[in-house]
Image (cartoon, rainbow, N blue to C red; front, side, top):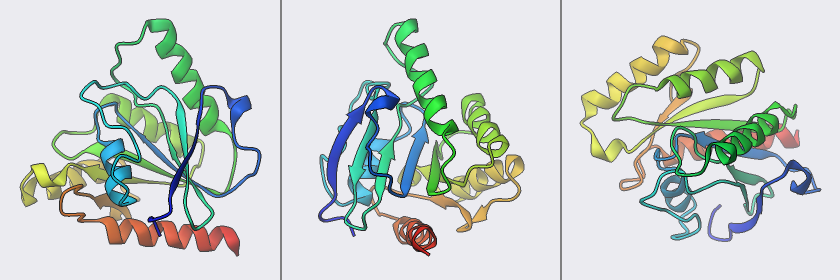
Length: 198
């Protein structure tokens, strides 16, 4: 699926969104959750998304076009940034307004660091997604950095807040090193794409 994935554009204003509407797989998460590493390893295109030791560097909505004719959309990270407060507010409004756009052809992945309990910001995002009745799932990142019992604990922590989600049916542990979880996530995206085209 991924060998021909390409970076399309960075969007700083909703007026700049691609004109042609395609199904969208949207990635949300804290600034240091590992979204760029997920994109690079999941798509198997090293350097496709820029990784940085400085959290909060991504301040635009970044569009990637996949060969399956869908968009992978990387949202600005939340929770930390060296940007000014006015810039942070601007990016927050951009993200919220973008997610409020009602589009049935959207699958949202909330990325959460498996090493830690979901933060208040993570939970706030989930509440927003539930209230807006948006189609979403949770990806637990950095699973190569923890023991198996911690992954199980992280799944339980998510389920305590989102009991409707279950392992492999809404909660996906992922490792950018071993690629654990890649097949299950790819299957979820494939099913979503087929649904959009039906």
